[in-house]
Length: 479
Image (cartoon, rainbow, N blue to C red; front, top):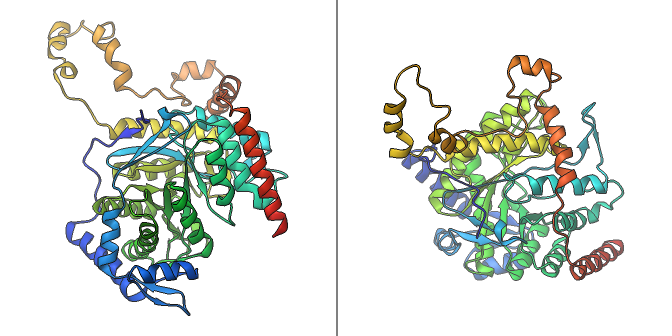
């Protein structure tokens, strides 16, 4: 039995008219046919040549016929299940199902000063335990931190995957870089788990050798793949949403053709990371409304193609603190992605860009996810909810509904009860120390860590993972 997540029961938010969808589709196929995509691996170029692509081996540029692209779009499953350590946490990807996950950061922060620092190994594990506890975190995303104090950078991903396995019963996505999937695949097999390999393009229109090799390894292992584009509007892609969509779509379709050629019917999710470039500084801008426009259009395009789609950018903001800016940037972006049919959306944990993350932020984001989830599931309209008999029974003043069985039965289903928000009256707020949402979030983190202890791996699984990590250490020491 899979996780419920949320179901989009409203009509999906659409930005593009039918003719505009067709125009972007034509542009995407034209980019693939005329411009092509650089595939930085001889074996990948050879494989695509055998599939019928035109290749320039010197430039490693591959041009894709429209018929091949369309056939591979048909081969990729439109809905599928990914397994979690606990079957109750399995995910059903595609359709109108909406799952939330977490973003990540290079470092944690000091909540008193908001200055970044490296987390300790135990803080990394505590963060994962909080994410495992929160019911609106449906699966683990990549990391959550880019390593921890004292870990070799080359070992950051394998060690992080191991910490996730030890502290969560949820499915996890794992990044693929520097051959780390050689070891994360082995760990998943040893623990009897399934991981999703996350592959990121090198925009514009390039797939690096590391991502291509990882795709082959994931396909051979039979593990699902998420492709993620890196198209920043005005930098690694055109400044327009439409132009960047054509570039991003072409990147995804190039990898989709390769993977479906390696393993027809392989499970794939198409992930969009929508960013704009700050034209004053040249730095990426997180939380901009243009990113939401890009996500909505992207989701509409890939619902048109029929494949599961994910959005990564809602989990990141340009704010540096857990403040008003972080709240509105995350909430607006997540709401738009949810309404437009994103199947998996990163939200929780990230504090500032991809630089910092903290479990207290994840608790705050849990309430954003809960409120948006309540909204996208809409309203039940029935005799029971209209309650005409009850209205007639209560009548005008002095009648009231507070003590009625109908109210006791329905209020929790109708209302979202926040986990960390201040809902006291003003007088109560003054009497109880003038606490804000961040104060409550810090308290909730402490309560979770005191009470939540995920089921550990077996002794055999733990020994196998330690052996694989030792092999990884030796492998990277020799490089």
